[in-house]
Image (cartoon, rainbow, N blue to C red):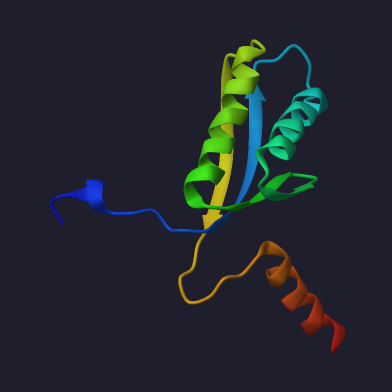
Length: 112
């Protein structure tokens, strides 16, 4: 593959990310998390916040754009350094939402 510019990104993905502001004046990051959640809400992406981050679902490009915008939002607030842990999944055999994945496991557990 010599020309990677024509290689597309997957049409859909689920990404779990945890944005970590570094060097803030307080160990609490709840205010920053709330600001990021407001941004995500306005993005129109399907999402769910959990205790260790947020799961986003949508097009590959839009999901990654919103994660980048979350970084810039906090940079604009004076957070100089941000690290994010991101786990991204895509598949081409079928469409599967993050809710579908959780519900499948719950169905199996209900049989116990």
